[in-house]
Image (tube, rainbow, N blue to C red; front, side, top):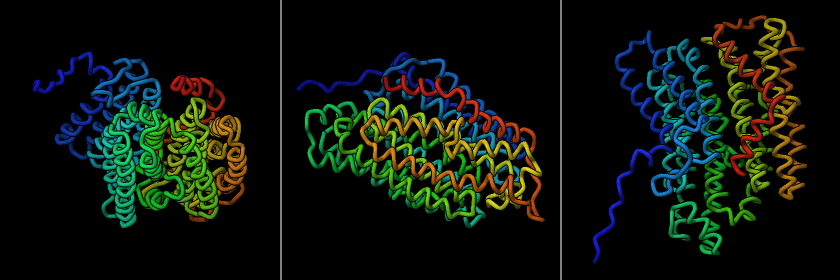
Amino acid sequence: MPPPMIAPMPTAADLMPLLPEMVLVGAAFALLMLDLFLDEGRRIVTHALAVVALVAVAGMIAAGVGGHGTFLGGMFVRDVAADVLKVAVLVTSALSMLYLWPFLRARELYRGEVAVLVLFATLGMMLLVSAGSLVMIYLGLEMLALCSYALVAIDRDSPLASEAAIKYFVLGSLASGLLLYGMSLVYGATGTLDLARIADAVSQGQGGTMLVTGVVFMLGGVAFKFGGAPFHMWLPDVYTGAPTPITQFVGSAPKLASFGMAYRLFEVGAGGLDDKWRLLFAVIAVASLAIGNLGAMVQDNLKRMLAYSTVSHVGFLFMGIAGGGAQGFAAAMFYAISYALMAVAAFGTIVVMSSRGFEADRIDDYKGLNARHPWLAGMVLCVMASLAGLPPFLGFWAKLAVLRAALDGGLMWLAIVGVVFAVIGAFYYLRVVKAMYFDSADADAQPVVAGRPLRIVFAVNALALLGLGVAWSPVMAWCQRAFA
């Protein structure tokens, strides 16, 4: 009997595709140690270095440092799609961090672990979008989820935050179990965890009913992580209960990672069954559009309204995936990137307006804002107009892209449903605009006390939605190259 083969040790050249991830994890551990030697007054050093690390790693990926390739026996894949999503994840995370510091610091909630948890959550997202096997998908997903649970519970003295964290943990664990059960069925049907080999097995007609059942369970787990209906029950309570900048982070960058997970699982792994999972995505898209828009219309709490609007935006994103093919996934990626930027700006509105003891999370809090702060009202108008999908803002082109993908995929009925709910969805965003420009401020209206740096960050974020709306073509072309 021949001796067992021993895998050779990886060389430096083999590790090059993993270089951005290694830099980020090294930065996370270094900041974890540095925080031990900093007092409360100097915690901004840790926070600033975390932002620098995120931006630096994004620059490395955009510059092509490390090159493309596979590692760990195909478990880790670095390609154009992974690079696009990683840059978007890193930029979104860095932008969220800029909002996070002043909010938590003013409420004495900031801990040195916050920056480290954000870095490790971002690392989980990067692993998720580069996954080449079911094992790597689950590893990245759980790294992201565990860090997110801790971030939501950062305000331990708040009953709402504690309740949100418990709900997030319990229902998130249920979603992870659902996804893991689907993966186990796929493994049992194909005999492999490698996505490329699963694709080969699907093309050869292996697996039968067990494989299809596994794909359905995995789709349910993915929809749960996205917050798509009817798997959205955790999202409004978690978004409302968590501190606003934590909601901002949880509601933006992870959507990009979830899209990467959906692409790896369904297009790369189960692409041969697209006639089945495309229809399921279309059904979930319709349910998300209906429940999300109708639920948002009756909300008076702005965070809860944005939570339900997230469900509706997931419906639009799923519309692109349901369209299928390179064009459908490119449109869905463009929508995911656009929504991440819009979500950061939307929750950034609340962060800028709030102060200690005043959360600015009611729509009535924005009454008469134009009379008090015309420039700030103009920035909020840009955010709401983009979320509503009004031209020439970024949200308009994102919606147009996924509607076209649905038409190209032969789903005219889905495109019609999307147009109808796009019109309905504009109502609740325009409620905020009406409150700012046409309603009188209450007698006890709170002044805006946000500092100049935070106002500048918000202005850049809001104006980017207009600037990218005017010059959306390069971003779309980048997304299309990812699936060429």
